[in-house]
Amino acid sequence: MVTKNIKDVTENEVLANDIFIDNLLIVKEGTPLSRQMIKSLKKRNIEYVTILSDEPSNVKFNSSQIELPNSKLINSTLIKAEDTFKRALMLVAHEHRYGKILNRDEDVQFLMQLFIHLHKKHDYIDTFYALRSWDEYTYLHSIDTFILGTLLAKKHGVHNIELVALGFLFHDIGKTKIPQKLLSKRGKLTYREFEIIKKHTTEGEAILQSFGLGNIAHFARSHHERVDGSGYPDQLTKNELSKELRILQIVDVYSALTLKRPYKDEIPAHEAIQILLEHDHLYDVELLVSFIEELNIYPSESTVLLSDNTHAEVQQSSRLSLIPVVKQIDQDEPFTLPLDYSITITKIIDYQTKNFQMRYSTFLDYLVKGNHQLANEEFSHLIDGFKMEEIYTRILLPAFWELTNKKIDEETILESMSILKNLLKQLETEMLQTTNYKFKILLIVDKDVRSTIIINFLLNLLHLEQILPIIWDNSDSDKHLRELLIKHNIKSICFIYKEKSVPVRKIGHMKISYKSYSEINQMLARITNMEEQYFRIYNDLFKMSV
Image (tube, rainbow, N blue to C red):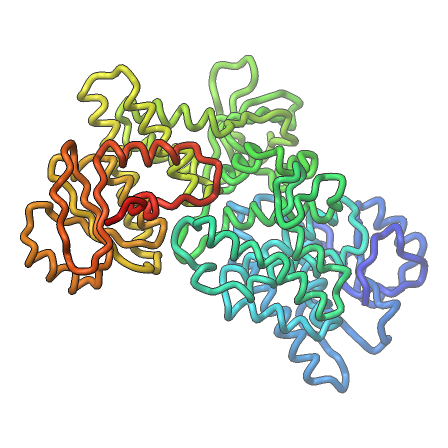
């Protein structure tokens, strides 16, 4: 059995699967295709069919029963494959994320039979199921990507659709070589963690090469490349990426954004599309727009063409409904598109995007206005795709300095700093839950500065370096201090004072450092907007250690 473009089908080849159009059986499986039938299928826009011309004549396929005489083991495997596909479809193919891309029964049948056929043809398919036990999300994401990517590839006439679909299914197989604790980490990755995650591309390539699948190994290696050359591992550009790879890059990101993880809620489809459009320099825009139109899910503020040949702007999209509120150009009142689909969106004409600087300015504006809710919402958009270090160097620290230098009243600045402190606390809580700490240090801080946002920043950045800071009162006795050091197995102490230096204290064989509040300020200023991937706050604290 082989899947062929209808243009490549020749007379008398035998159809392997029933063909349905609008729930009507058009051609039954096992039928030899005549020239007239092939011509008719082309007119009905059937692009791909599965034929039995290269399979033994006694093999029968259909969606409800699979018979392979004298092969109980294969029969069991293929029944399992059908059940796996149906179960996965129930989990991923919800209307609010698939839109209209899978509305045709013949597409469902095509995908299921292709999925089953891959199990029949490739005995190493069991390796794919290693993903299920290693990381359930990656396993489901891979099937989701197979479905969405194959449908888009089919629409765009990609050749060797069976091989491409196999590459989509196996694109994340390298994740089986990545530590589970990283794959399931609750929260943002650090640069060091991201460097480990990135290895799944080359690990996946090696696994597929070991199967003799060099012809699809590039799907594993290159699905994180981007058309502007900013991807990994090879920084390939658009001209170096095949159409099927450019398709995979889009559906891979869309799937990752819209699938729910145990530790992270999914993003609504229209918001995920907005994110893709805001980063359209990373993707093939023609394919991206085509994917959006296949889904028939459109982001707010996009300009669209309606089926009555009028232009409209999408005013509001919903997480649970495909029917948005639109406002026709030159009309005052918005309206919800009819439930009977008498007027629908046919294509996207233009879309609004916000780059990082625009979103950052909006975030800063909400801080100044003291709007906690909107500042938090904009912050969540800003940090999308950021490593943990970048959240501080590119967002929080620049915002802090800008607020400090703005000429605003004391009450406003206090409210703004309160929002920043809450964001820092959220990040600190996240790190406490997910970080494997290397050791602890003691920070003995003057009470005058202990509650300042500068100290909050310092604590967060130490957490980021996998160092657990413990705050202590500078006025405590040496006896209590020694008890604390023993209890927590602490070897390093940093005294932070406001103005005057504190008296030097000898406490066992401790590494002791003394830093003024202004020196901590300078340390934070140095890493603001820093382009390097790593910074070392601990080393800065103890450069002049006693």
